[in-house]
Length: 431
Image 1 (cartoon, rainbow, N blue to C red):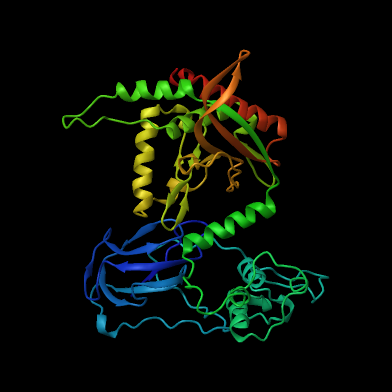
Image 2: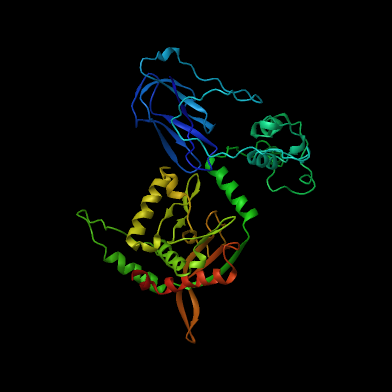
């Protein structure tokens, strides 16, 4: 029987993806392990591999198509002996209609994680609104009142297509309370109305920008955050870095095996600080606190499309040269959108370094499930008082943002103080 190739869920949070490129064409023979297509997610470009053999009979979704929902059929593979010309694309379920109870064709990708729809329990009133989280978010962004939208999902649940139809039709009243005050996220039409039509260029958000906006908005709304700032003297760190790089072995072409940066040393210092303060090397969950055995440190990397945070796992066990080479690899693959989900999902803490842009100090926003993030400012010469004497020293301001659910102020202060000790006594990172 024909085999449906489905839009894969390449991460637990993925809802849609862009079909960037087909690497096979209709009529091509397919073997297990062949790369069929490239999918752009919110973080990277991933490859879809075949797990069955046959002939690519029909490409359902052409390359370049954006926002393809997870589990939509993107192609059909014909089995041995089947007439490829007789195979047609499966019909899509029309909006508002129930999905047929037919046995699904064999998929080539694991389905996305799903949540069961909300159900009415005994004694509940009919006034309660049943809507998917995505539908609620879109309605909030568009300043729509969900009570005026008819749901077409199971048991009358309001789903994404219902809200989008209401936005397109313009027949639903704004949500109460959003008109009198300024909503957190104004609708596209409202914001555009503030500007002259010929005064801007309109560029649609890509998946990465949507995800960044959603996750950081959720972090600000859900996580109680507090901030702690101190200054670190980095003269010893700069001297040690110079010695390490001078002693790096060189290959036959004269290229050094590694070149350690200040940021690499910051990663190591935070990792060692986390394991030295176990109460800060944690992740808050609804029912438990996860106490980690090692420090997985996420590091913000700027790319043209936005920001991504690959994770140096068990950074407390790694040498500075290994961290340096790993970060170079992460940076190159991030810019090529070749990072894998396991490269950037998770982490116990994170680092955001804007020092190279001349930023002295700033506060960064926590990215769940991490419980802290360290904001690194630029290193600069400052006049300080040291042992009663006025001297010039290289200083760096750092600010840690902490999840107050995971740690209190004293524990956060203990963590940033431990970081300062490693930065100001960097030889301890080599032991």
